[in-house]
Image (cartoon, rainbow, N blue to C red; front, side, top):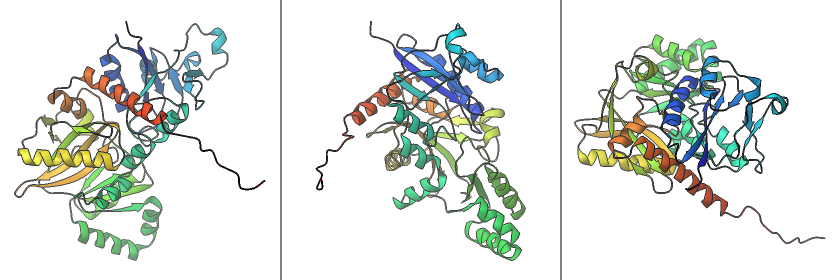
Length: 383
């Protein structure tokens, strides 16, 4: 029998998407093939405490974090295991921490999990991990950077502008300039518009606005979640299309799926609370339009240096058919209603096999990186 692989599934985190992460983690932990993997659940609380062990998911939900189970991953590359953060727990706790970690599966949506920060820890710890690396995670997470890079490659996107929280605060203090800015924004983008925090997902802090007061209120909301905000032109009568991408240097795209939101747009409430939104898989698109979307998804995936997985969202209009890239999500949801596993299921890849592939891709990328030279022998020209 081949040796089981120790998979650390890390979830929760210091993010507005903490609760969504717990649901995704539950799906992954239940689905992973227990004949192949020893699953090590690792939770992170909203204030940054780590907890490890088989009951960590339920304990994180309850808020009861026993000191004996507190443990974290260190950047020491010789360790490759969880280290207890409470010294006494080594002597008194009946609980034994799991041994060596072979692969990390982070399912930390949003800030401090999807933005390259924890990926940097995995790199320092010298561990294979599922998903994009530091660069791909950071560029895809930040909507402003992502848009600039994609536009530099001539990918079609809805017109947009951005501003910082400090700029917004300054504008509001200078009434004449503020009115001029509002008028210029309305003239350029026109209503409806979408207001988005630059570094959040799951539609947290996103608003659709139809007039000036809603615009002001929406930006006031968005700056509560991030220091930079995107103001984007709304594409009228657009279909919301999503594609799942899988791979490393040679990514493949799933069939296209359409979201029919129960609200005016696919916001947090429509995604996770009401449960009334509909999905059409495959999306009712001409074959040539679907192929263009799939090709663009893979192109954007490679452009941003993504790896492993990503869900890529588009807006598509009819008569004539036009495709607009919306955004990339490097750690898509894995809830019962999430499109990423559903799209691959419709493409012939079951969730269990999908996780096998993602783990294999993480190991492959790790092996390739290990082959790179990290030292350089120089010849001194002075004594």
